[in-house]
Length: 202
Image (tube, rainbow, N blue to C red; front, top):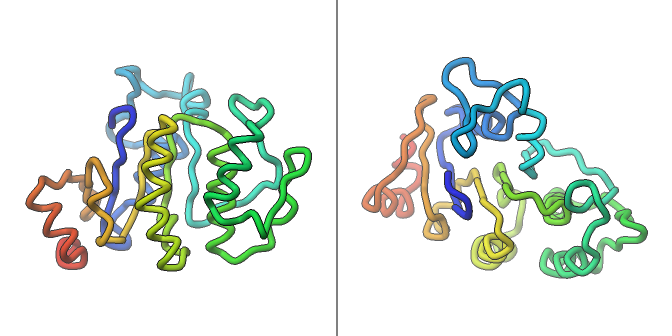
């Protein structure tokens, strides 16, 4: 991955996508091979620092009501307020003294709240594991067509696990996980995947 990339990962259930995501974010240590950043090996000595580069929203995420900004500082109030509206949460949630008023929301709205928390952290890398799966069709379109470009404009590198074949065109790179093997799809394969993701995954 290169800085500023928008990378989509596709693959059948059980192919290893979520395991790879946890290796990439430093939660799991690979038993074979290694993770490197800027040619530097990630190991037990620097793994904690490496993990601090990421905000990640997994399918089983836990929400904290406290907002934290860059490097543990106060969050940028203007940024938080802007994204509260971008995520269409302004009528559901308020922020007072960096605390969210509630997390008692639908699953799709909770995922949006997790996005707000991730944006407030201002970390360089954002990993999203099937984030759009819980969104209604209208907001799913907003995510792919509007929010992804805006996250990229904020300087983020995005790694997105997705099954939304109608939106693969928004990825700079499209990867396929198949039986534990990671493949990058070329232009022709990307067209096939976009036309019929299920056939590509078989």
